[in-house]
Image (tube, rainbow, N blue to C red; front, side, top):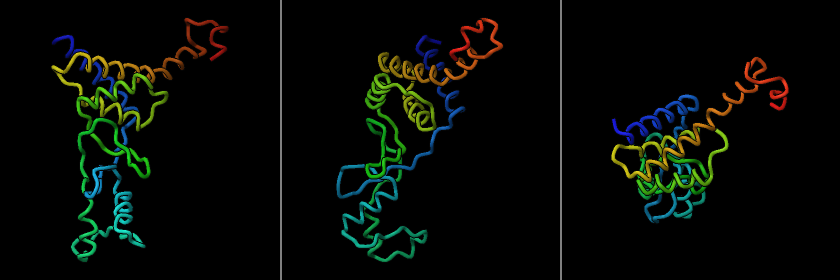
Length: 188
């Protein structure tokens, strides 16, 4: 096993450990309007955006009985595309409500997201942080560019230290810790 393979395996193991402790969110897929090549939306917001495009008064709501749609409703919903994961160069969010959407990063996207995470490291752990880390780790593969591998591994390492920090602090601040005196444990 080469050094790069060991580094990838260790980073993947750390991401798995973080994802077990903080299960990633299951975000909705991306949608967009076929009339513009602009923003991404969640399903609820794309229906609202389509209604504004049609300049409707009351919005058409989606029925579970799609086979009963009128021609008007069919035309309305035909202008909406998406409902699947697409590759992108950054994390994806609904441009109307800000909800995180499901995404897959390109190689360039993984590099730019890794740079962002290195410049602005996560300061707390939650399910959305673990989802972003999981998306980033999907781009770890054997034979990838060394620079990108090291950047992603640095992000995983930073986040892993944040993930492990509460356990280490609790261990250091424990009153039964044999290595610390009472004076050292007081500030904790």
